[in-house]
Every structure is written in structure tokens, then in C-alpha cells.
Image (cartoon, rainbow over all chains, first blue to last red; front, side):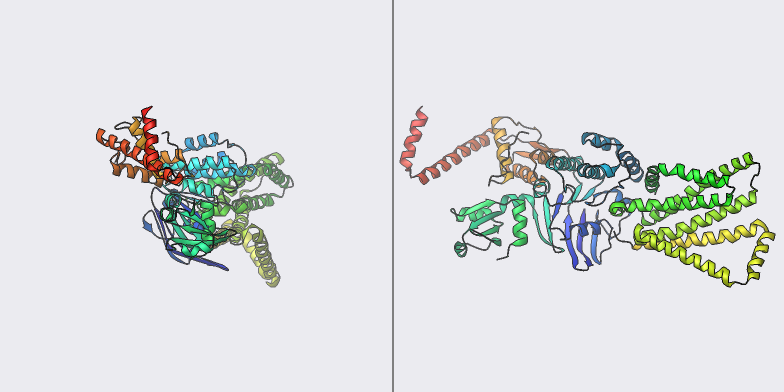
Amino acid sequence: MLKLNGIRKSYPGFSLDCSLEVLPGRITGLIGANGAGKSTTFKAILGLIRPDGGEIELFGRPGTSLTRQDRRRIGSVLSDSGFSGYLTVNDVIRILGAFYPDFSEDSFRRGCGELSIPLNKQIKDFSTGMKAKLKVLAAINHGARLLILDEPTAGLDVLARQQITDLLRGFMEEDEERSILVSSHISNDLEQLCDDFYMIDCGSIVFHEDTDRLLSDYAFIKTERAALSTLDRSHILRVMDEPYGCRLLTDQRQYYIDNYPRLVVERASMDEFIMIMLKGEKL
Amino acid sequence: MKGLIIKDICLLKSQKNTMPVFLLLMLWFVLMDNISFVFIYMGMMAALLACGTLSYDEFDRGYSFLFTLPFERREYVRSKFLLGFALFAAGALAACLLVWAAGLIKGNPMPAEDAALSIFSAFLTCALILSVMIPMRIRFGSEQGRIVVFAVFAGLAALVFAAVKLLPPSFTEGLYSFSQANGLLVIIFGLVVPIAVIILIGYALSIKIINKKEF
Amino acid sequence: MKIIINTQSMIPIYEQITTAVRRMIISGELRQNDPLPSVRALSRELRISALTVKKAYDSLEEEGLAATIHGKGTYIKAPDAARMLEERRREIENGLSELADRAALYGISPQELRQMLDIITEE
């Protein structure tokens, strides 16, 4: 559905070199610290900035510039930008209808009703939650094949996050071939929603895995430093110092459970996983 | 492009409180028999309103999301110019009605040639403002754009002033009598060509700027 | 579909799903040709990734307990009675094996364990 091959972009003090792929029918996550390059990657995909090098393949076609038809098939949510604050939702409905031939006004209105979004108020007077929900509703109701979402749930409370995740799941259920590329800081959302995810750090992709494998095969091993030398280190990915000794990350959980029955082996959560991948050392 | 125009109309609608003031001012000029200024003022307002939508688009980093919507970049420029022209057309109609009504009431109707001249002068003003403001605002943003636009117009004014001062008085007198004698057609062509040139330059420049712009 | 997943367990989620489905087949809750929810629908209910559900469904298909018709979904294939019986036997065997390990850990001898079993089954 979407493929980035060595997309490069340089700014003073930062440069991006990114390769990733979003397969049809998948929800792919992009995680990383602030300033790691998530927004830059999205802007390159959406044609807001021009890459210095690399290729983008979208809907199976190569080329870095998006046609109007391409844009009709993409729904986007940006974290710091949206419809002009001086517009009302009724205005937005008219505008979306003019831009997208497949815009579903009924579904959009229904969504606004379900999420208590006022139709006649100016967007600049909306709460953060309402603005976020409006952006997502606009993105999912015009028959898009691919969603590009940059932090769609940032700054939202649990309830609002859940509502948005449900909207996205509904979007995927309507058509099995649709895909979503979503960036987030909120690990819980990623764990529950994403099928696979990429981790970006300092402008490059440093990791890619299926969420399913993360939850079933990865684990943390907590041990004293002295015991480290007795362990088989062939499946240890990272080490991080802790007050009690050290914490290790493995992608072969069962191996360690089977061979070291006394070893403390814990399930890996997304948060802790991100921490150790970014801050831990390779063995 | 339809979506862009609809968006701009919705944005302008939220500005409807400024309309009455504007109409009152026009009325005032008409009552003061300052007819030609009515048209020029109207032309200026049409251009400024159209350029105002640029600020709305830019407001709160709105450009980023806007340019993910399905339109080509040159359509954005086109929509702003078209908006300016459409507003001018509407304004010209309103002004004409106002002037004609005032002429009836006061008993001194304006001759058609003078009205046509005023309308073309007004359109020249409108086109000039659009052609300078649109590319400069897109390039420099609304804040810095204001300064740049001011500088450009100040520069143009200085040029005209210097030209008038430097040219021999016989030249300007000759120009004046020539225009009086040779009638409307020459004047109109003397206005239409500059208008077209200005618009073309402004449009081409804006296209170039918008294509290079990164959000 | 009423499946309860323990997200904190060390048992992989897809395994929990297949175990639950197997249980429902054995108990008769799921019968031949009953449809399983779509991958996306089940992933929504359980709040997990769709790949996990797909893995579970693929696993069931491999076991012969389900079949996917492209474009229509996944349906239960009831195993024959002999297989069901074997399933149930295996279930008991696993339970006993676990118990035996635990007994050994506590220092209860196999003989003691057999005695306990005799007493229990007599009741």
C-alpha cells in the first residue's frame, strides 16, 4: 500500500533517512521520541515537504508527488494542524462534500452525533478532544484507502482515546484492504490497535516487529549482574542497568523460561520495550 | 477547486459584521460626490478581503492540513485570484447601483464614460493589490508579508512620484490633453494592458512560490 | 463471541484464543458451519491486533477445526468424534502432568499421588 525507500531530508541539526512499508489490511504504528522524525516522515508521505532523496511507492505506483486522485484516497490527521478555526462543522461538511466525491455525509453526521460534536460552533471554540475527534471523522468518512495519522490521540483522556480507536477499528472493518499508518506516544493504544510497528530514533528506523510477536515472544529478564555471565546471551537484544542488577530484553522468551526455570522472566509491555530499545545497550 | 472556493466563502461569511461599515463608507463617498473614490475603495476592499482568506488559511498552522486535501497547488493560487475578481464583480455591481440611485435622487447622473473609467481604474487597483499581496503573503506569511507588501507599494509610489517629478511638464500636459482628446478607447487600452500584465506577473510568481513552498 | 483473554499471562494470546475455541467446540457451543467473527471484528472485541487473531484462525485451520472461505469468513469444521475424544484425553493428560510436576515440587511421591487419586475417584 505504501513503501518508503531511503527517504532522506536534511535540516540543520537533524536528518531523516527512513524506510518502511505498510501492507494492505494492516494497521502499522510508528513510535519514537519527540523530534525523532515521525512528523517529518508523515510530511514527506503527504507531499508537504520535498525529500532530498529516496523513493515513495503509493498504491503500488512509484513517484514522490501525489495526484489529486491519490489525495482523495488518503485520509490524514496532523497533530498540530486542521481545518481553519473560523469554520463550523456545517462548513466542514460542505467543504468535504466538494473535495471528495465519496464523502458520506450521513455517516459523518452520525459520527458527530455519537461523539457530541456541535455542528454550529466555530472550531476554535472546541475542546482538544472535540477537535481531535472531528479530524478523525473527517479522515474516515470519504472512502479513503489509506489513513495517515500523526498522533491522533495526543492530549486526550482515556474515554476520548477509546472512542477514536473504536472509530479506526470501524474504518478497518468496512474494508479489509484498507491500511493505517499511525504515530503515537501512547503505548497502550499501539499495543491494542497496531498489527506491527516501526521504531524511529534520530531520523532512522531502528526496529520493526509484529505487535503479536512482541507480546508473545519478547520478555524482560531481571537478574543480578553477576548472573549475567552464566546466561546464554545469543538471544539477548539489549541490556539496561537497574538498581537490582540489570534488565535484559530477549525475543526468545520460551527459550529462557525452559532453560532457566529460576530466572525472573516478565512479559514485555510496549512502554518498557520502547525504553529499553532507546536507552539500553546492545550486548 | 470548488472546495477551496466554498471554504473561502464560509470563511468570509464569518466576517459579515464588517460588511455594514464598508457599505456605510461607500454611501458616504457617494453622498460626498466622490464617485471615483467609491469604485477604487471598493476595488481595494475586494482585493483585501480575498487576501484576508490567506491569513485565515495560515492561522494556527492551518496550511499543513490544508495542503493534504485533494487539489493541485496551482488551484490554490487560482482560487485566490478568482475570489478577488468575483468579489470585485459583486462590489462593482453594488457600487454602480448605489451611484446610479444617488444620481437619480440628486439629479446629477454620472456619465457612462466616467463610470467605465472609474471601474477600470478600480480594477487596476484591485489587480495590483492582488498581484502583489498574494505572492508576498504566501512567500512570507501574513506577518512579514504585510511589511513586504507595504515596502513594495511604497517603492511603487516613490517610482511614480519620481517619474512625475522628473518628466518634463510638457510631457504630462501632452499626455493629459491626448487622453482628453482621444477618448475612452485609448484610455481603456492604456489600462487594460497594464492590468493584464500585472495579473499575469502576479499569477506566475505566485505559482512559482507555491510550488516551491514546504509546509 | 465470549472469549476471555488474559493479557498479563505468559501464554501467547493467539494460543488462548485457539484453546477457547477448542473448548467451545468440545462443549458444543460452537457447531459445524458456525461462523467465527471476522478478524477485524474479533480484534475489536478483544482489543488486540488483527494479526494475532489471524494467527489464531490460521492455527485452527491447520488443526482442521476451521476453514476460511475467501471473501466470506472463517467457519467451524467440527472434528470427528474420535478426534474430539482424543482432544479430551489430551486435556486430562495435560492436567495430570501439571499436577504430577507440582506434587514432585512439594515433595509428594508418585505413590502418594496414586493413593490420592484412588481415594478421589472412589467417591
